[in-house]
Amino acid sequence: QVQLVETGGGSVQAGGSLKVSCVASEFMYWMAWFRQAPGKEREAVASINYGGIEHYPEFIKGRFTISRDNAKNKVDLHMNNLKPDDTAIYYCAASDAVVADLEERRYDQWGQGTQVTVAS
Image (cartoon, rainbow, N blue to C red; front, side, top):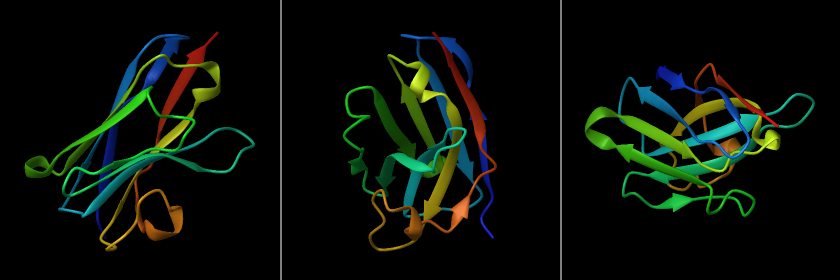
């Protein structure tokens, strides 16, 4: 079982920025961030593969940036221009699938989640 430990998150005013980070106990080909808001289904917000290829859903593009440090098995999510609708628990996920992109079903390793709250 791969351990994923998330840090960061917290509370910010609308328009502000936050960073969440995740360190994996071992190398994983795909690393990603998902989020789940109260009463809503979990959704993908960004993924990145070993080679640095990034994927974002349309509603995120331009505001969030994912990056990784393969030497540290670490992935960061930089979130800018945050909106109240971005309030959610953010989960780090990882996969060794050949193709994972933003497909939740392809991720089999999950962190405990970290809360991000954006006040209006």
